Length: 170
Image (tube, rainbow, N blue to C red):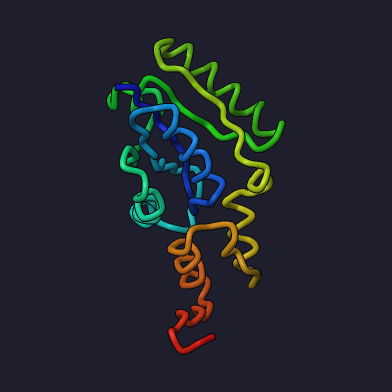
């Protein structure tokens, strides 16, 4: 079975991330969205919250599962018997960093390929950092994240949740 790992902090998962997941589902029989525990970052959401938000967002794809990991990505990929790692590239600035990681990973294990995928142009500008900043400042991020993530962000920043649509409203 061809298996790919899509690693990231996903703090929070965005529609751009989900675009990469959807593309991966067409290329691989099994896609593992692996939420990374990274001590160097100060995430907004806990590892458990991020994993739950990702799980909710990917539940529509039967060949996608969610997991979390700590440590070297290449070691995790070996444990999960993955053939490849998939990474989203938004801009040239992403490429330089991702290219270095891919070369290091290849040096550690040549059997695990790294595949770079560009998200749709609709999401090319999107990042978790930008989404958090817009929401923190009171902007509407509902077009950038799944509904469950939008609700979690509003709760985190102490915003009033919009009322659920009712049958009576026209």
